[in-house]
Image (cartoon, rainbow over all chains, first blue to last red; front, side, top):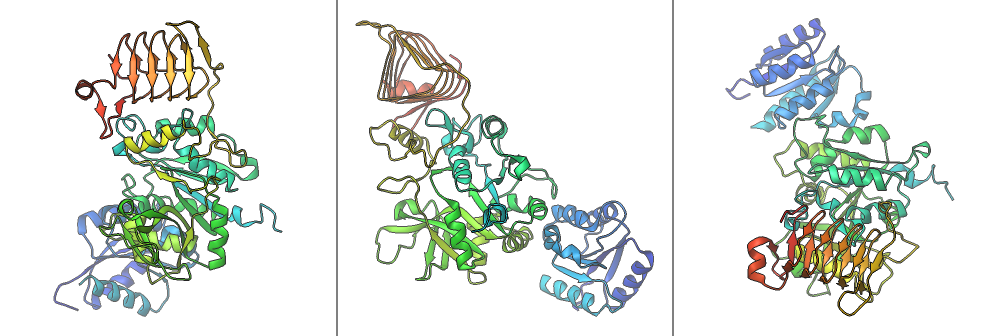
Length: 123
Length: 409
């Protein structure tokens, strides 16, 4: 990592998962900010200007695909990683705007690698 | 032989880009978008692409509208309510719905991107993308079968155009297998077709995509700072990465030379229109095998009244639509849309007159395009004094006078 601290926005309705991601990504050297639903995520993007968004899909109310659409409407070049327990959303063309689609797993290596890859490609 | 419903045509979704502003057609595009501009007396420009689509057997059609779409929308509702939803057929006009962002379509690729939900809904295998701006006859099913045979990601329909004109188009370079090896949008120096000096291979803006390739490419492009345009961004980005082939335009017009017009300017509009009046027009409106459908208002037959030396209702070498009354005036080499009235002692020569225009007594009009609902006062002279005309109207490079819809005297 360079000396600049990159900021991640983690969007997930599951509090335990947010806590886990927060701890894991902080220890990787990222600044972490969080939202528990779609509308909150949209506001956080405006307020916090994150460098990358990790987005759950199935959340109460607005789902992650819709929230991603709104977020990309604000900033079409903000990298978004979809992180869902389900792989079938891959068939939804609307999910193809994401820079990556990582299926949730107890092992975070793939997600971490994708985050690093996308952050590195920003430099 | 596969049936229609199990067949390939029903696995194809057609998307027609019909948001063109047509700025160089002003004032005809002052009240409407380019696809809604009247042509040939009773047609609109969109009717040619829609007729091609229907005549080719494609029956699942979205018309993506945007700019000043009311006129187009009304025309399609009134004239094109001919498909059967019970058979899975449809033709729907889709304005920007801002599902994805609170903006209008920022380019042709963005129009598709913002409607990806429609591809998700119908899950077609192929998507036929057309422009609603052109006049030609083409059987898109031939192109689809070529696309499938070639196993291409995208197939682009192409036509040889003179190098000078090619500067206005996307110019395609192909190898001996018809694969596209270069693509330049509006190039300064268009690449010539090998062995055919003076000619370049132009893109007609007619594309068939494999659905997954289309969704990938427009999604990729949506995340870039580009003009979100097929010709400028999508096609050049696909070069060398995906299989792209050129389909050689096969004309269904059944004339000796092939016909495809992008009516970009008032002068080209005027020339293409007046050509319909000639003895043997280049564009064939009279072929039952490839009919051009449109909206027909319920109006009475054409009528001429008065016979005499001075006051005689007369129509010579003209296209005249229902509801027209020529009462004691003369109409020569002109196109009259439904509901036009030409009054006594007036003379209309080499003119294109849109719906419900009223030509007052003793008016003399030459080489003019008069848009709808204009009441020309008695004794008006147009087309005889260029300087005087210029003070009042739009006058083209070739000296054609254009009078806007509802112009008030």
